[in-house]
Length: 145
Image 1 (spheres, one colour):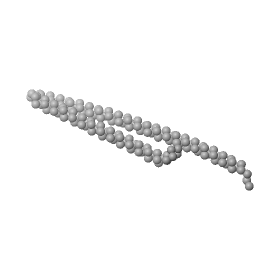
Image 2 (cartoon, one colour):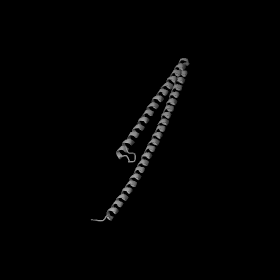
Image 3 (cartoon, one colour):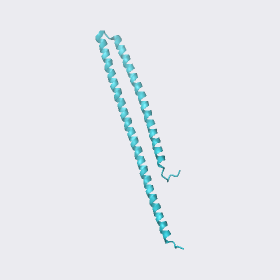
Image 4 (tube, one colour):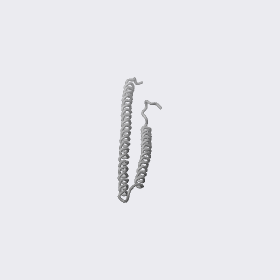
């Protein structure tokens, strides 16, 4: 393909859509991997805490000891759940910022390319107009027979 000719708009649109599709695929892949890792981390943490609570239940004395273990387990559960939500929210915020930066960069590149191609088209049109003016001038100066 001749690189001096601007790409047709359909080709540019197809290229932009392909880039957007690839960006979305990478984003979904990152989100999926993060969700899997965070879910496993949370489940493992809760299993450890449940095991510790069961160990404490075996050694607790009476109803006050049972209630104390239960309250400690519940407190840890709420703290773990809040911490998990904070990590997920922070990660999604970071992913959204990266996606916005990527989209902004792609849009900027498309604008720059479009401006460059428009400038080339204006320059080409000016050259063609000048050539037509020269042709018309030379045609008018030819002797008629």
